[in-house]
Image (tube, helix red, strand yellow):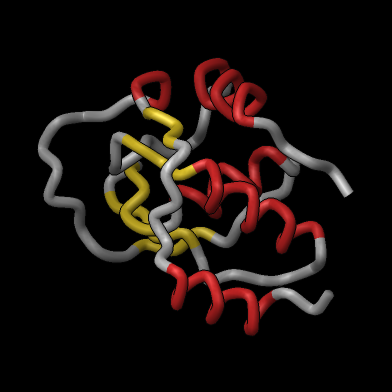
Amino acid sequence: MKQITYDQVVKFIQETEFEYNPGQIEVSFPILERIHKRLQNGNNFSAIKTSNGRIVDGHHRYICHKLLESNPEITPGGTNATQVELLWNHVNVSLVDYDDEDSRRLFAERYDKD
């Protein structure tokens, strides 16, 4: 199983030309680690939602699919209130885990079959 590092993810986001622009300015490295592992274990996630070439929902899933050189399911949907056009090389990779303990437990019960 491939592991990812913080530095690898930062470099990947800075240097990769993505098909869709981001709709948010930050992503969480701990969430990326969990999704990356779960995708390699064969888990499926909901489609990435986009609007006008911008990701509305699914930034972490999108990045992980691209790191694994796989194509996520993309579906039109939703809107993004951000009026400023964001670029991937401005997206911050945070070490803060956005998921609280209950969310991590629920996701683990659903996806982790260790």
